[in-house]
Image (cartoon, rainbow, N blue to C red; front, side, top):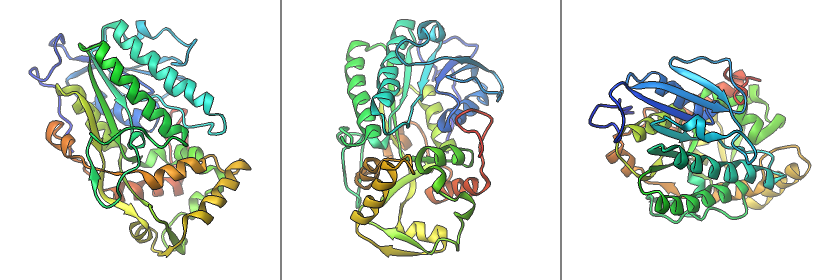
Length: 352
């Protein structure tokens, strides 16, 4: 993994010689904590302002915190962003999946508020957290680059919202050509400290964390389309830092190898893979979701089975980025955190 420090020749136009100021919106979640840590350790970064709905007790170096709600009617974001050299927008709400208008209000309308505040505050760089979920269904036997259509999977709120913000940014770049806009499109992101949060978001209490260990799961379903990519959250943070440092624009795919499929997952769990049709698995998940036994919707399950695999050549060439950990290592670290009930001292990542 390359985590380029900002040299004087890399600094975006208008930055002074005393280091840069970065505002991270949504700074206390899985990605935000890794990005804030990476920025706080970079000698070329003068200061970091982390925005979150709830201010954490966590105090990394050079970092200030400010409580802010990005939803309509929330805080005036312009004064908070004024004077920043770059804004990294990571804020996202995954739940409640039973009330998609609520996630739309935060993710889409809140995202638009952040984008507009960046322009009003005169910030020269906007780095936005898009996702592999923004992509239209694609191949599992090859990889797509950043030109693949970003229409998402329309049934799932998460993919629909990610795709909609791609269209917003298309128009935004035309209206604000002086702002350098970067869109990160990572695969699934894991680290030890995210385990408790991701359990709450996707599996709820039905997932027995202490039992998710090799030898205790007899079989992994081998479902048609079950082949996806992942990477460690700290590795994606390095890509965000490089996007601030380097004069790049546009979208970047981010993923580590190898792709995770039934065979790879069976190896992780010391289990066998069991071929199964999608229908029965989806029916069980759908029933559990309707009964509010699990928070992840069956529509998101459908989207995962259709996501394309990502070609990350552009990130390697233009960001100088290579992940340090494999997808298997990232997933195994997450599972270790799941068994331990791991977390961090922020509200989204609280242990348990």
